[in-house]
Image 1 (cartoon, rainbow over the protein chains, first blue to last red):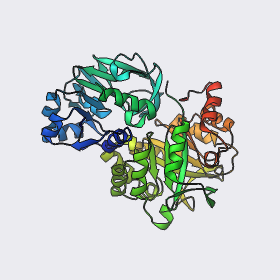
Image 2 (image 1 turned 135 degrees about the vertical axis):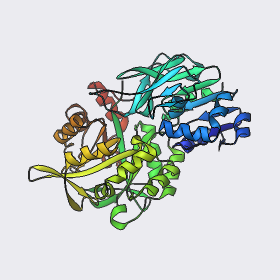
Image 3 (image 1 turned 30 degrees about the vertical axis):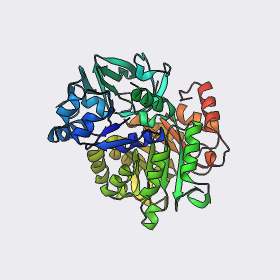
Image 4 (image 1 turned 90 degrees about the vertical axis):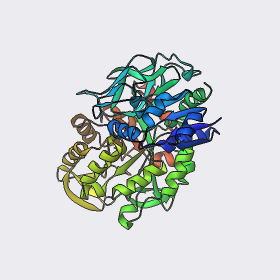
Length: 193
Length: 251
């Protein structure tokens, strides 16, 4: 199986490659259109700032390319946020794959960013096969998505989308590549789609 | 529910882990990668690797070690020590670190925090603060606790957050290495005044101390080194203890 990881100006891209390698799966970090279009699976990971990342994707034609992909695609963290309609971070329009909005956490009581291990609920996708309700996964983010196509939720300040799905596009707000064995299961499930 | 985090800290010198008592008298406690993997298996929520001699000797944390850690460990980790400029941060993140902690360099050049946050996001910046309670106030120290600064703890912590730090890692120099418990009053003060997560460090000696850091110190995470390195306390045992006392932990 060939797995392509979208190369762009976000951080932590090699973490996903490391996680896949620990599972015995080789992958290619690339921004080559042909490599991305012909891979069996595509992962769109990263941490970073939404408007900066979106600008980079547009300048490199990756925005159009990612939207046009036909194989299973997994967005992670900012990948998920960029796949939504609009992000409050930098007031930027995203790829519009998911009918969802990205907003900043607001609270006078809770700490922001939301950092650490939190539980996932309402799991309703093959992506979470073998994973129990209330399992802990690792998060680090200040913005969250809300909208349609939610296949898992997490509660921090309020419930929000822990994962989204539409057609061949999947995305998780948490970091499977940093979520120990549970994260590995999510990645394995994705590769098995 | 967001879990309270247990974070083993591995102080690194020459690619090996060490732990001092009040920053002196270092002892060798093993290979960072092996120890990190073991902690991950035991249920550590995160790891911190600090190159404690970096500032003093002007050394950089070795990207090669960070790269090896990133390849073998499936939980988040923070790297610190010897970070003086943005290029240091870029190299460590490129090698696979999830976060970097800045300490002395940020005290001397606070704009460094803004630069890192602007380039890589707030979540990448952990501002590590070593402070000592003396003359009825908490004062910040730099260079591994060797040089006293003019900055009071709360002032500097507040400034660091305003400049973009995503977390504060507070070490009480009075408590570090004593095993008499964390500086809970100072922790609670930071936690109540600041909008970002607070990591407690310095003084862990028993399971009750961790409970106190969360329940009294209102810390979001607690860090310890020697207690874990010498197998005096297993992380899973600690977490079960905390869970029984009503603290949310990942088991």
